[in-house]
Length: 281
Image 1 (tube, rainbow, N blue to C red):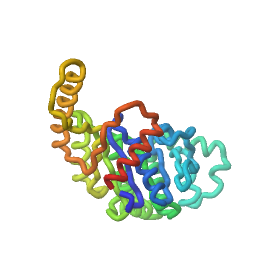
Image 2: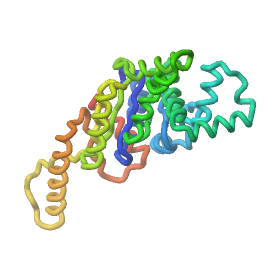
Image 3: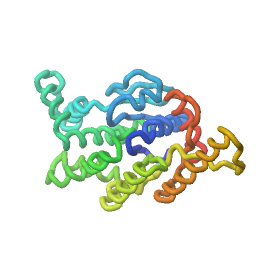
Image 4: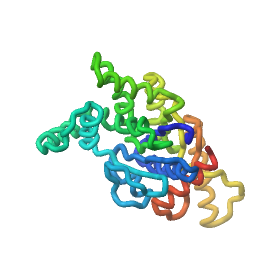
């Protein structure tokens, strides 16, 4: 994944996608890449794992060579109008800015195209070797990935049509883009992952995704069953491991991350993720 320019990380809520995104960003930074990590959805996922304050629209260096930002839709829309559609001075008019803020927040199609468009613009700008996007959950990611194609289908010609086609081509380029779906070896995350993969196969919007299964238990090497609490814990572990094997068989993962036992801060979790990913990639 570090060979790509853009890695989009999604998954059902609660599976650890923000931790995986932070771990990938840290791994890229550790390998000497210029990395931008982006919160696409609700704020707090990446900033918590980087142990920083809330992220803003302007990228901020959180580690040497690693910058992070949060997409503010109204800011992204104003930037698009100012830089790409060449409408200077938009930011100077408070009433206009407030109107666009309402538009960016309320209109679903606008909301999605300016969010994914900002990600792709950062890739195009060539300031970064790797852009890692902590994306919305799998239940929502499809509308973001399809937004450029939808705009291309609606706009017959002109600058917006050309930019939408460029975005569509970038997302579909296997040398540029990788979608990573994070899941757990449990029923609900596995079911949602399968549904997402079927949709992606039908739509052909991005290259085939990488599936990352998080919180997988190791098999116990000791087959004995001691008496007392230790034996009960061992039997419970074997039972959970056996159930996980069933769900792992439904969606065979490309990468498997272990269950991190113990009490870790979000920053420590991201660091552990980065170490694990380095051994697997």
